[in-house]
Length: 356
Ligand SMILES: *Cc1c(COP(=O)(O)O)cnc(C)c1O
Image (cartoon, rainbow, N blue to C red):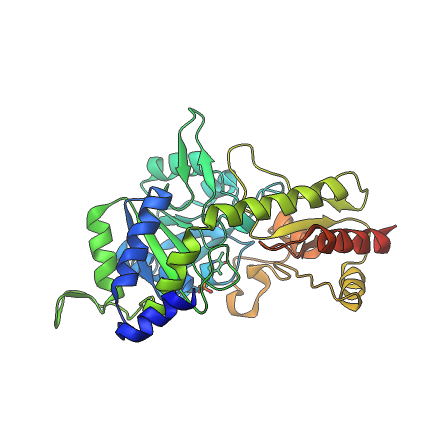
């Protein structure tokens, strides 16, 4: 790794160096997605995707209420109208039935989020999108490397199913760099060209600007790091799944815990291992874990419609029962690629000690 970083320093190709192009190509090959366009972070990736699809102020974009704020943020930032819908109680991903109900004549796009590492139910989502002539932008920040299987057996990579996919290489993501990074995926060559142009100030030829763009680049040093780590992505995913399996085995039959359900049609790369707590005090559990030096997190404690920045007269408390319930009950335990059995057993024992 230090060699890859030193090489960028030695060649001083800090911006748009050969590693950026090579990483894009290697990720295309790894995922089997025709075009990968690196950019500065996962939030930019979402914004650029929406700009490239020519979404206009006032257009409605449907997304999951139970997600990281970035998804809804860029919709609002572009003057589009975020339309929030509830999620599936088992997979925590956007509910296709709720999507269909939220469609109006102004709806232009759907942004499913592959939350915690498994794919939203993309086959019905694509069917709805095709029927209503809508774009689909997959937020794949948490699920790079996951696969979705259609009813006919066809397998597709997360981020390669919709018109555009986006991801993040934030250090804690499954493929993380040593700073910020992101990428945009598409199978459409014209769209790929447009996305590259928007990432680079809307420039078609040097100093010729066809469109209003942004400045969003993946640093060469980050690309060099990602090239090294991409080779291990499958091993990283397997290590996460092994850790999840061990948690599942320990917690499956506990009356106060609901283990994360695995969708029948998606692999799970366990960006997070997220349980639901029943009839127990979540704050007290997390405090107890903290005293034993075990970090835990709540993704996400407040639904988007209850956030000050996203309050909207259309929505009130109680409108999204599943999201609201999950925000009150979920907690995530440590999961990463270097989880030693002994360390994990200590975490398991400590959780059980509190609950029993
Ligand atoms: C991390 C994340 C993002 C944003 O990625 P950044 O690189 O931090 O901008 C967007 N959506 C989801 C679901 C995420 O988890």
